[in-house]
Length: 187
Image 1: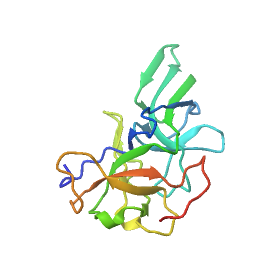
Image 2: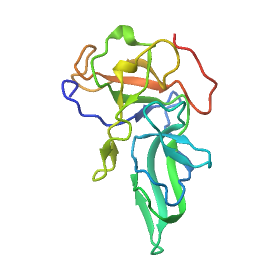
Image 3: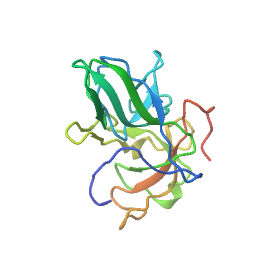
Image 4: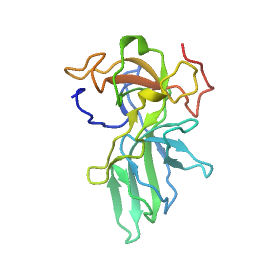
C-alpha cells in the first residue's frame, strides 16, 4: 500500500488511555462544504465545526460522522456532511482529545529522522462523496521543524508492508496545532 497513493484521511488509531472517544458538536444548517469522515475540522467563528483548509492555523480534530433531522422530518445518520444540507438537530461527532494518535499517508517518502518534524496537509478537502471518506494526506513539501505546522510525526504507521522510505509512507501523528492547546515548538 505505501508504494501506492491511497489516502484515507486523518484516521484516529489510539489514545494513551486505551479509549477513543468522540465529542458531540454541531454543523451549521446549510453549511456550504462537504465534510467527510477522517477529514480535519476546526471550530469556526460561529462555534460550529467546519472543514479545515490545508494550511489552517489550528484544528480541533477529525470528523467521524453526523446525525440530523432532514427537511422531511426524518432522522439521518451518515459518515459525511453533504454541502448545503438544510437540517435541524445536527449532531456532529469529532475526535477532540489532543492526546489521540492518528495515522495518515504522506504524499511522498518519509524517513525515520522525520520523527518530531511537523507538516501541514495536502489534498485536505479531497475525498469520495460516494464512500464518504476523506483523502487528506500529509504534505511532505511542508515538513519543517519550525513548529508552525498542524501535525507532528511521532512514528511509523502499523500497516503491513509499511516502511520508512516507502514512496507514500504511512505515519503516526498527533495534532501539534490543536485549538484546545497552547502552541508547542517542534522537537
